[in-house]
Amino acid sequence: MTLTHSGRLLEVGNSYWIIGDDNKVTDVVDNVVGAYDGVGNILDLTTGEVILSNVDLQALLRCEANFTPGGESSSSAGASNPGSSSTDTGLSGGSDVSSSSVVGPNPVSSSSVNSALSSSSVNPMSSGIPESSAAESSSSGNSEIGPDGFPTIESYGPPPAEYTKDILSNGNKGWNSRYWDACKPHCSWISNGQEGKTDTTTQESYEKGMTTARNCNIHDVEVPTFTLGHAVQQYWYGFEGTNNACGNAKEKGVFTCTDMAPIAVNENLSYAYVAGPGSQTTCGKCFHLQYDGSFKDASANNAAKATHKALKGKHIVVMTSNIGHDVEVGQFDLMVPGGGVGAFDALSVQVNGANVKWGAGFGGFLTECQSKLGYDNTLEKYQECVKDMCDAAFGNAGFPNLLRGCHWFADWYMAADNPTYHWEEVECPQYLIDHYMTRINKTKDNRYKWHDDWSTYKEGDPLEEQECLTDEYPNGCKPAN
Image: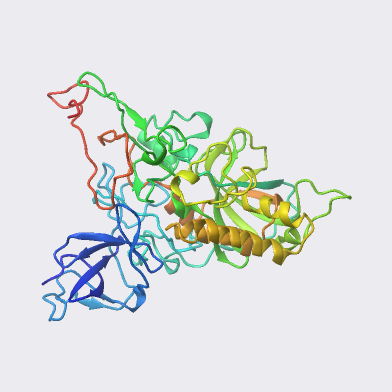
């Protein structure tokens, strides 16, 4: 049997499965059997349950299309070294301008393939700056795609020195709050530019505003941010944002993609997403923060804690994916799993385990740990307590990015409560751009059919479309079946 697409070959019983570059797992006759989660498990696409564990991807033979398992390849592009890949894993969004494997800073289409992509288990590091020579572009022909479907860290080059320069004397001070409600990001909604959102009036304004922030369904598969409206008819058509899981849609709606959890580039630099103040930022802008070892409510009688002091000097580059109406100038509300579900909770819908404790609604796991340990305990005690809560909530949830991001808060961020920093605006790292920009709605126009329920949408499913503005329907769309 000859393989129809490239991937890594996994022997299962008397046959083989192929783990494709898009994480889709198929048998030798191209039937989809599951999805690889990036951390050693193959999951059922419908239920999200583990159907095979302890898969070491790097130990598997990588094969190109036309390779014959157990026989000679009919192509010179047969088996290759594990880890090499140049496969395009993007999604079509109505444009066929580019075939690059990654959306760049000035977005055009990155693929002509029309299928859903999972955000599970992303590579934790990248650092390219748009339109900068400081780092390699991830859209270069030499990009190596990791098992997560995104470029590997090697594709981006080292982080620019700009991201770790000392800015503790620049005068711009602020502080971090934290949350993770798993809701559809504010920056996913289409608009004419109000409330800091991307202006979808023209294709130029849509691209300039970094399009829209990615959405995923309850199984962490990327889905559209907007489609044709639910009420389109033969005399009218328009667009509507996909339903937010924080509203009445619940499990049928859309969520924050889990790969937007914070990640460490190295011991001194991390990348993350934030909700920013509408008076200071707009969707898709980035800021460099350097922590100063103190916290928001510090005073002579309430000195900085060991956690704040341990964070001093570290740097983080954050990208605005939400606009917070209650966020102050200089404040960035950090998106971190375990940071608190807030007033609009979709996380308990997505991770619906038995007896999961989410900690304080505002403050999350750390606030709960402070109530147990007091406010002047050791760094190690807070780290241990937070990680125990991370493991209890996310350890068996099937969302490895949430567990990784939660541990990041304890290990890299030092479990610091509302730390203060100095900040400056910078150009965005390519990593944050790649994980922010929708890979489906790359143009301001589409013909995707409205769905009330995205929970059944599986990786690889085609996106249904309707006929609109044709000779038969010059003012609207063909009525939905």
